[in-house]
Structures are given as structure tokens and as C-alpha cells.
Amino acid sequence: MLILHETGFMFEEIVVVEDDDFTRVMVADSLGGHGFSVVGSFPAATQALGHCKKKTPWACVIDLHLGHGPTGLDLAGALRRLDSNVGIVILSSYEDPRILRANLPAAPAGTIYLHKRTISDSRSLADAVRKSRLSAESKAKAEVKAKGLNALGRLTDSQLETLRLLAEGLSNSEIARKRFVTEKSVELSISRLARTMGIARAPSTNLRVQIVKAYFESLAKEG
Image 1 (spheres, rainbow, N blue to C red):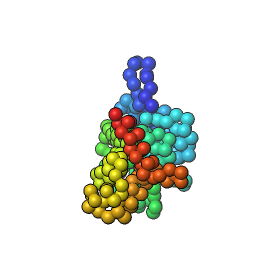
Image 2 (image 1 turned 180 degrees about the vertical axis):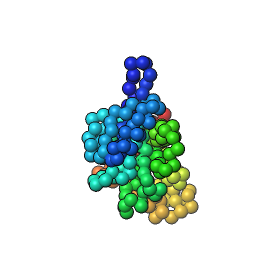
Image 3 (image 1 turned 180 degrees about the horizontal axis):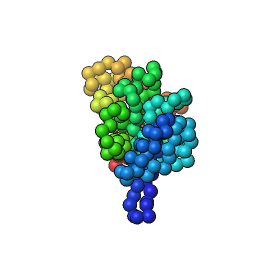
Image 4 (image 1 turned 60 degrees about the vertical axis):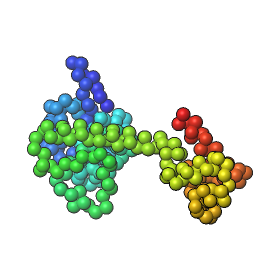
């Protein structure tokens, strides 16, 4: 979230999660000096998650190893389930997170992983935070766009051609002749069409009729 300071400037709200007290204070102070508003600073994942459930921050900087309990990657996944746009930077003393523990959860898409020894100055950390937010927003928009595709957008060229022929009223044998395939192949193609378009076979309605109806409804939405 962005907050409006009394000076009129907008500040991005950041949460810092680090079990080492000294490092946590240093990270928070560094980010504060680069135009961020640190609204939460916690030593453990459970505390941070409790805070973020009430008010999701613009981004989070999280240490990978938070002692006993959930790891930084566990927390990162939980935060993304709360808000797909939240930026996430994972800090670690390990070049590869798998060194910490086997079977760690994967980092959410767009997460920035920083090896602590490679952080040259506070600006590089601030830049990583902003980049993580942009990456998260870009990923979220792409997912929304993909989910927003209508049934036609999920079909292959071959499936779409079969669908057009169905809509023209051709029988399975006629479609087979036009496409130079067997009738059995057409039958299988129609079944796959229904599954791809999310059409469940209704006992009282012909599957071909259901598919063609969905086809024309999709065309109407496109228009």
C-alpha cells in the first residue's frame, strides 16, 4: 500500500522480517532512507503474517532462515496468497536456498533472492524491493489475462477448425472427409473440445449442441 506523508510525498509501505535484531534494524533504517515507510518489523513469520492479514504491505523483505518454525519462503507463499501484487525480497546467507533445508517450497514468481554478501549498499537493496513489486504486478496481470481468455482462446488451430465445422452443421462423417481423418478421430476431437471448453456432458442435451452453443456465446463476447 502507498501512504501519503504530510509533506505530500507518497511512501511505499514495507514490512521487514528478520530474526537477527541488529540486521532487522539495519535493513529497516536503510529502506527508510530510500523513501519507504517501514510499517512492520518482525523476528518471526507468524508475527509478520498476522500483521499483513490486517493490512497487506506494498512489499516485504524477508530473511530466508527465521530460526524455528516457518521459513522465509513459507511466509512468502502465504503473503502472495493474501495479495498477488505484493513484492517479495528474500535475503539469505546461502547462495542456494536448498543448502538451508531439503524440500523448501518454491519462491513465488517475481521474488528477488539476494545473497547478503552481494548487497553492496542500501540502494541496491532498495532497487531490489522496487523490482520485486514490479515483477509481482507483471506476473499478476499476466495470470489475470490468461484466466480471462474465453473458451476459444484456449483452443488449438485444429480444434478451432473442427469447432467451426460443427457450427456449420456438418456431421461427423462430413467433418472427417473435409479434414482427411477418420470419424473416430472426429469423435475424440469433439470430446477433447468439450473438456477444453469446460463443457460437462448433460444427459438431456446433445454434446454437439452444447459445444456449438458455447461457440456462439464466445463469439458474442468477442464482439
